[in-house]
Amino acid sequence: MIFLTALSLFWIMISASRGGQWGAWMPSSISAFEGTCVSIPCRFSFPDELRPAVVHGVWYFNSPYPKNYPPVVFKSRTQVVHESFQGRSRLLGDLGLRNCTLLLSNLSPELGGKYYFRGDLGGYNQYTFSEHSVLDIINTPNIVVPPEVMAGTEVEVSCMVPDNCPELHPELSWLGHEGLGEPTVLGRLREEEGTWVQVSLLHFVPTRETNGHRLGCQASFPNTTLQFEGYASLDIKYPPVIVEINSTVEAIEGSHVSLFCGADSNPPPLLTWMRDGTVLREAVAESLSLELDEVTPAEDGVYLCLAENTYGQDNRTVGLSVMYAPWKPTVNGTVVAVEGETVSILCSTQSNPDPILTIFKEKQILATVIYESELQLELPAVTPEDDGEYWCVAENQYGQRATAFNLSVEFAPVILLESHCAAARDTVQCLCVVKANPEPSVAFELPLRNVTVNETEREFVYSERSGLLLTSILTLRGQAQAPPRVICTSHNLYGTKSLELPFQGAHRLMWAKIGPVGAVVAFAILIAIVCYITQTRRKCRCLDGTLPTSHHRCPTFSAVFSCPSLVMWRATTLAGSHSISHSGFQKLQQLHIICGINKHSPVPSHTHLLLFLFLVLHTSALLTRN
Image 1 (cartoon, rainbow, N blue to C red):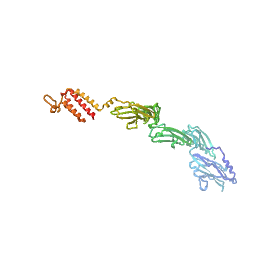
Image 2 (cartoon, rainbow, N blue to C red):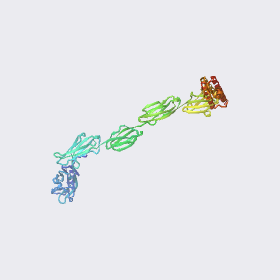
Image 3 (cartoon, helix red, strand yellow):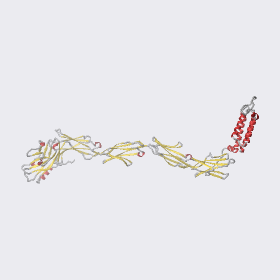
Image 4 (cartoon, rainbow, N blue to C red):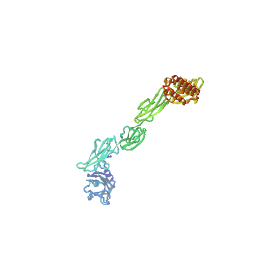
């Protein structure tokens, strides 16, 4: 806004015109409200040598050349004017004093345009000046706002209206200025080209809340109904402020997540979504969403929304927590240890939320933590019992994962008490059970014979390993009569252990010496005793199975051979043969049934005993011979 102090340019022009040149001065543009009037100031000059008795003048509208027949606004000679200007135009200046000021009244929009003045000194001394004035008919006050208004910085807004009508002067008032400040009226000021304006100022400190505020100015003319209003929307520049953003977001792995950020600023901000310094999305907008499909744990973290424009910036963060089941636990630490050492094993995993971690062995819980991602297992002074498979299990409400690991405890050999020797007929087997890690070597020593047999001699030694146990079996044949002393020796890199293996079951050795013949004899004697007890006072049956009575005699064969004779004959026959078959024993059994089972048998009890002893002795002799 430019305001100048009053300056008499008219006198400058008059001074210049005394040089004897044709010239004119008038404002290049002038404005006035519709329905009011306007005074267009005008001065002109002509050569001094021309001394006209009377000076006339003509005002044309929109053209300076008479041959074009432009509308005549005012003509001093004839007072004949164009119909549009009848009753509306008159000359305020004195042409003799070279003042050509024109007054136009009852302005209407069609009167807006260019106005030219032509000097008429008589005869050929006429001159149309190229200088002209453009009249603008307005109906709204002019509110002047600085091109840039920043929030927090005091600003001056002015309302300017033309005051070029000597008959009507406007009065100004502000509309919608409540809360902004009190206006200051400067009054009537002259502009650079000699026109006049009425000015009112409003000073205030704008805020972001006043951006877009509609501020108005009203011009009214006393004693008339003329009233004009003008409005301007305040364009307040201010830096971004993030006004909307997600709070912390929790999402299950694989789900969809939408992060929203909205900012208020003028001009609109450049919104950017970032994570760990990487730009994920950006746009010039008041709001911006970041869409994440099928989120993974890798997308868990803090996201930054940055809003910036020419006047500043703002940023906010939002945390995304991706919930997921534990990952397969990893085990770091000692997996091989020497007996007596301290073992430390670390089991770790990753999940959200943190899991329950448990380490167990053979369903026995050894250590556990709640809502931790790591679990330390300390085993002071490990023993062979600590050797084996362990499990680390991690679980939360979204799932469970487990990892198996083995702890190998290395120790010197231990020969278990179940190691022994045993005889079977003419064979001796020695069992040596060794517990050791790493796998030991095993040797059997026979000190009385100065012989050592190791496990590589497969003809005599069989070895089998199961876990930490190594079972070796030494087989010695032809040793039933004199069992040897056997010493088992086991060795690995942690030590050597020896044990003389004891012989188990003396009664077994006795049966081995007696042999199968003695066993048969003893069994036969036992049967004979049972027969003696149970067959007392039993009678004989005939060979056809009938019972002899006083009225019934046995058949001829039975009469010749009584039961004792028949049995003795059958036993003798069988004993004299070279072999006793299964059918032979069945025949003896049949005779025994015929002669011994019947309680009516007349044979005395001692006869049965002698008969069976005879049979057993002969049978044993035969078996021994075979």
